[in-house]
Amino acid sequence: MSHTRITTAYGARPSHDYHTNSIALKQRSKSANPPQLRPFSGIQGSRPRYVPPFSIQSQQKNTVVINGPIHEAPVTASARGRAPNPKSLKKQHKSISTCNLGATFNACTPPKTAGRGTLFRMYFDRGDLPIKMEYLCGGDKIGWTVDIDKLDYSLYLPLFFDGLAEPKHPYKTYARQGVSDLLLAGGEKIHPVVPQLILPLKNALSTRNLEVMCTTLKIIQQLVMASDMVGPALVPFYRQLLPMFNAFKVKNLNCGDEIDYAQKNNLNLGDLIDETLQVLELHGGEDAFINIKYMVPTYESCYLN
Image (cartoon, rainbow, N blue to C red):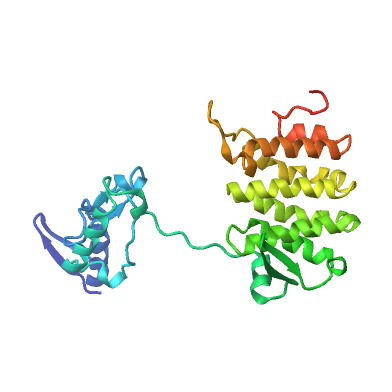
């Protein structure tokens, strides 16, 4: 077996096969001289990233903090190492300058998309409701194309209650007058449908629209007084209805020594909530007050005062 000799600075020493020796030298060189990590200074020519203020990203390198929404087009993996386009940078700086501290809030907020319509609106647009508008001298009024006593209350009463959340004409006009007519002519047909009315009432109160909420409170009073069995039937559903009562109970109009000429419209939300709670207590039975007090702690009984 032939041996090769490798001459070094310290003399000659025998070694094994040349191939085995070269592998050993490569392994030794890797372990003895590991590659040194250089600090990352960013890719030259790469554009800075625009990040929102008070975020973890704002402490990173190659970032610019702006005040406003960030609208950046997605960057592909092949285009990350390229130099930025001057035209795109100019457009980006222009869009960022409109959202600085001096710009108005409305200019930087994205436009709100219109929400989905109610079920009442869908039925009304399709022409599936048995109603029409009658234009009279004293004002507009709803006309029923079918005898109201022959209507299925389990279908039409929750449907019209769902339209209470509509803030626009003609939907709100048809829904409110339709609910009023159905409650006046309902009688004993209303009590079996009460559980189906809770979700539409809750949705109408959750809109936080002053006109919608005031109209809904008046409808609740009319609903409770429409039948003797409706008041006790609403007691188990106070947890769904009364949280909005508690949130807006103190929303009263403070006009000082002035005269509120709009009080005939009865649009004072705080007073309407107090009146509605008193109606619920008077017609809700013996368990009504304790359940109202649990959801609205500031309410005081109308029996004791």
